[in-house]
Length: 107
Image (cartoon, rainbow, N blue to C red):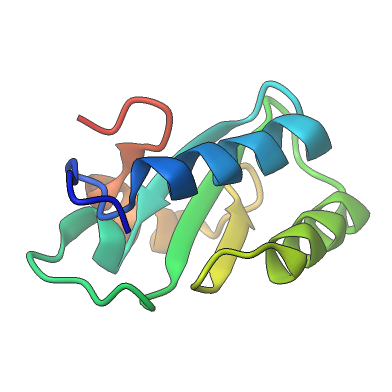
C-alpha cells in the first residue's frame, strides 16, 4: 500500500485500479467509500472496501454481478463490496451516509 493516505484508507495505485474497473464496466459512475476505510483511524491493509455506486440510474443485477466478478478477479489485496446507491435501503443509507467519502476526490 502506498505510504501516503488520504481520508480514504487506500493507496493511490489501488484507487486507480478500482476507478479503472468502474470506468470500464459502468462509465460515469460516482463511487462513495463508506465503512471502515472511510472513518477508522487504523485500517488493516486486508480490510474490505465498501463502495456505494451512483450511476444516475438503478443498476441492473447483471451489471452488479459483473462488477463484483471483476473485483474478485483483480489483484487487489482486499474484498470490494459494491452496493447500488439508487437501490439502497433508505434506513441503511441514512446510517452510512455520514461516512461517505468520494473515491475520486477523497480529501
